[in-house]
Amino acid sequence: MFTIVFLAALVLMVLTKLWLAARQVRHVAQHRNAVPARFADTISLASHQKAADYTIARTRLSMLEVLAGAAVLIGFTMLGGLQWLNQAWLETFGPGYAYGVALVASVAVIGGLVDLPFSLYGQFGIEERFGFNKMTFRLWLADMVKMLLVASVLGLPLLLAVLWLMERAGSLWWLWTWLVWMGFNLFLLVVFPTFIAPLFNKFEPLTDESLRQRIEALMQRCGFASKGLFVMDGSKRSAHGNAYFTGFGAAKRIVFFDTLLARLSGDEIEAVLAHELGHFKRRHVAKRIAVTFALSLVFLALLGWLATRTWFYTGLGVAPNLGVSNHALALVLFFLTLPVFTFLLGPLSSQSSRRHEFEADAFAADQTNAGHLVSALVKLYKDNASTLTPDPLYSAFYYSHPPAAQRIDRLLAHA
Ligand SMILES: [Zn+2]
Image (cartoon, rainbow, N blue to C red; front, side):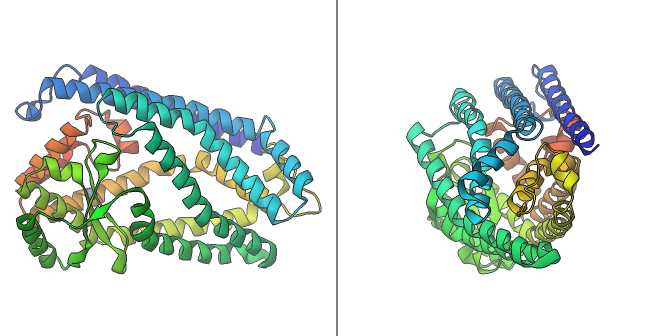
């Protein structure tokens, strides 16, 4: 019975994702030959067509990824992959922590290996073809090794703590695990900007004196600690430009990609910064963290219950280890199959993210000048080859930022 529910949900997810992607490809292709009227003065037909081709190439790649992901999931569950791995590690290590870590790690490594060709083709095929790739294969490889190391250093203690709680903390282990999970996430928010991100990029204070002065004046007006502004050497990997807001408390900071600073005027940079400060002022980071924590409590409670049901294992093609612990097995099965049941939450999260973007835009329009933010956005859309004509359903489902036309309409109404 559970097998049927799982397979039905998987088919629904795959078909929905493929259908949305196909809509996006069709919609973008249909609008490829005309720049939308409002952008006619600012975006050339050549740029518009480049954005269309780039969007279509990336969307097609994502369709292949959806199919590969579904194949891997079926391989692990219905085709017995996980059952085989589980038996192999049990025979090698016997029940215990070594077995648990080996099972989780091997599933993660297999998933990573399946992603590898897509990531390689995305970077050295698509990004390269559209002139965005600035990485050598050597740098790509070095990044990969570093990411693996960081994931092991951070993930291993977390996994051991969770397995230990599942073993020792009784039937409310999931509640304790939730507390550990919250602590771990807050810890990440502090160490990511200060220790992890610097492993991959250089972060330097802004050197342009006049720009720094006006930015500091703006940050002071908004009550933001002024040491939190950094320039990152994003040009090391990609020509895409961006700015983001990260961390909290003393670790909070605003990061500008050097690629962005190189393209925008002082006025535009100030407006983009005001937008990022808007996220900070409206407490968007704190709100997202609160929602994530609430959801993870629900999911962990669900896992606490599922882990003791035999049908949860057998329904997904795995025989539970009779008489010994199933902790690692329950974790792996749960996190492999959860996305199949939660993908419909995606649009809710995108929707709330887009509301936050509108709020940050409104804040920027109040603090600086809506027109400057509009011209910055147009430049960013153009330089990043982001399509101006996304499919309405596709963008409603996936987009964390409102489509360009909507954002600019609101800003102009505000001006
Ligand atoms: Zn934003």
